[in-house]
Image (cartoon, rainbow, N blue to C red):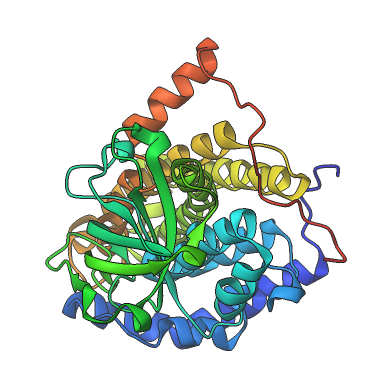
Length: 401
């Protein structure tokens, strides 16, 4: 499949639909929700009302059969308004849904993926623990064999949608002595877990204040063997492949933040006057806006390339790492410069750029910290690391799927 940067008519219509929807449904309330630290529990239902949870899944699983670039375009539009909206879709589709599409059996896809793609159930992803972030293989959560299933114990933290998700993809050690090869993956249904599963929010966060971010506590959670995704010991590989998908959606979303910073800065620079002229006439203002505009185009090209690789079924761990790292850094830098353009007003909540800056800090950390991606890129460049064929990979896009 040749790399074609032109959007199809379906993709252009999708962008127009999502852009108009976000302007009507999300933009009017995000400032107040952010100030109050209030999460709108209807976000997912609103996304589902226009079919976004199933955007890139085949129709046989309740999706719309669009390609992976379409998912990236949606994420860009959502984060243009606020990171919280992209995060809901990123976790649900990227981290969990695409992971199931890759690793789950047909029966599991019917059980879990179909209600997710049709927007009936919201899913979250539990990998990080209090003492296991970048070093995910050091997790302490355990899954002990018991009868025809498992008993799970442990804690997960910094889980987006922890309090509102119906389904939870979690990772636990089935063999605590085997390191990363002892990790297995499990799907949990909150309704079936009862009081053995508890979640609670993490409050007073720097950014993404309107989001649902929390912890998961598992105390003797009984899970049928049929809920295990992949074989025992496949969990770490599953988690990493899920992160490749999540990093793609984060990169595309951060591109939306850069574009939002450009638009806000251009608008203010054309309206604000000092010494008798628009501040946009000053070279240092132009320099900051020029850097934002340049980075927007670079970010977009990077995630378009990853989308093309996904569509053709190519391994893209190196490329999505680069896209995620560059785009999240660019979003933070663009927000920082946007505040400079706005001067003292940029420091106040009267304008959205201070929210953009606060929100832009978290994506630099999650789905692999800046430092993790720097090491990855260095090892790839030096030849210490290479992308080898994997046991399973995300199915390529085909038009008749």
